[in-house]
Image (cartoon, rainbow, N blue to C red; front, side, top):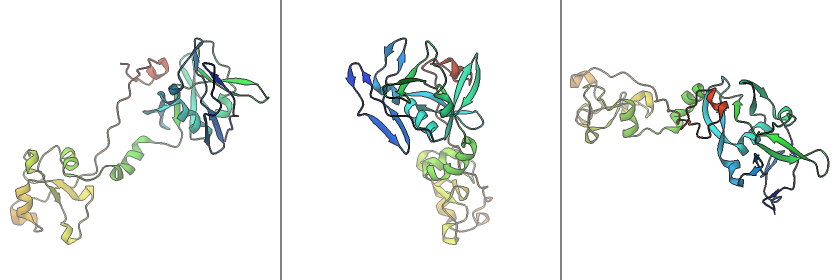
Length: 245
């Protein structure tokens, strides 16, 4: 764990020392971020200006500057530094000792001694060292995606599981392959989209009795990641093929 010392700072001439985040033993202040000697507004710390990679270096989301530093302090992420386009990961305790470039964005924190102010570069990309987006999606999506008529219809491409006909919304119904009256569960592998009339005809009888084959089960759908856009036009994001606006 890294402890960033509390610091009194002035933003636009206003004392801002009271606005401090305290998470476990990590202390980070709402400090000024400077680019070309221009002070950003305080809310820039909560803008999604940091690209998140999973442990296999696949981009999957963005994070605020504040969240990136807090996660780094907790040891959940490493921070990427780019030298001539080549990324090198750093832990926070090493990151805060890296000299800040002349045109580089930074925050300021309290130093070792009273009155000392240190500049800390703002990361553009972080790596979530214990996170694999593919595995997590498969494990957690069943919990996050409720089984509804629409969600089942979207997974099954709006096609009836037994007649193979595309169904209009008024004919949608959820079919339990193994009827709930016979111990079937309301889970993704046991539900399919079915024509409302055929579902009523089947009841809890076998499919052969209504003249159709038993449909195959389907897994839970994989949640699509939201599209990431490099609206800040950061060159570091370009290395991970993040499109610009």
